[in-house]
Length: 59
Image (cartoon, rainbow, N blue to C red):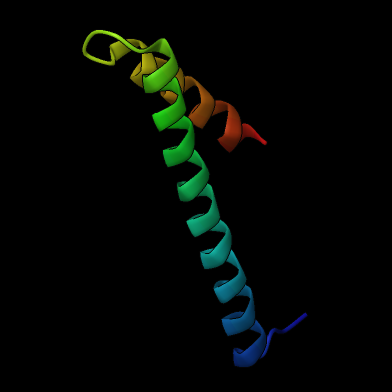
């Protein structure tokens, strides 16, 4: 099936929006983890965030 240029642009736009949404969610999670895990230099928060990123990408 051949895609027209308009269809490709539409798909690309939708994917860009999903990416922006993903980035916003991840930033929110990072803030929550660093706040709740809390003290120190945030290394626990960064580690957990990276685990979530990997899990999110699998889905």
